[in-house]
Length: 294
Figure 1: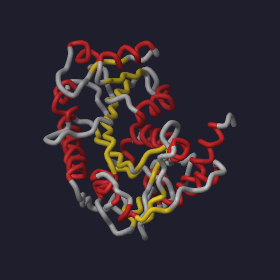
Figure 2: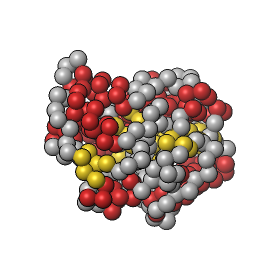
Figure 3: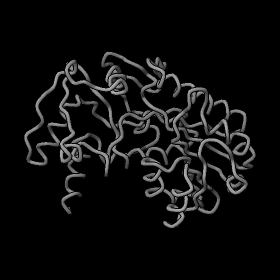
Figure 4: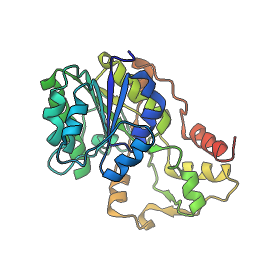
């Protein structure tokens, strides 16, 4: 496949960077975008083929770079009215003669609150708040674009992402971790390395399916994750705080309003993804070992 494909990563953030680091060599060429000229310059200084895309106009330079694109992954969040990538780039991407698959990083928030029950890719989305509705709308827009351009739309629904530089260990070290308790509440999560592996597998096997839940094996109460991380560090866990007394922001409260268990049978059984970190315990233990030179 090398030399025949070009992967475009729209929005070179936390997840996209890991996809590139782990799987760029599976594609013939890699193109990335950033939303400021300074970021583009920084990425180019690192040897990346980077272009400016701020969610509005399309430069002649970017337009030319898009022509050989065969695979796309967008991690750019939707705007209130529409997906900003498609609003600006749909005509350009549609002109790519060999466009095969477009991947959109969505959220498991589109399933809404299920009172702790399991959801899988066959579960009908029922988003609660405006953010979930915007994500579902963006999913539908990417599907419609793919159908019109002859490509396959790959929707990847993600829970909370953690990994190097973004994890409970760092929050404990900074003194910002909270052990919030809401009886019956669980969250699913995914290590960024496993996320990257699942995205690459889905893109390179578009016939396997169109929607994927990218989560680890064990949805867990958030206070258990904090307690485990503290024990790894040899610390006393922070005191338990009842959810009603936690004084969370409106956005955080909307996040806690959804309670569900996200099944990952699809990526395991149909895509053949083997999770390096099947639960938060393996993920946090590896991060702790790495942070101590292990």
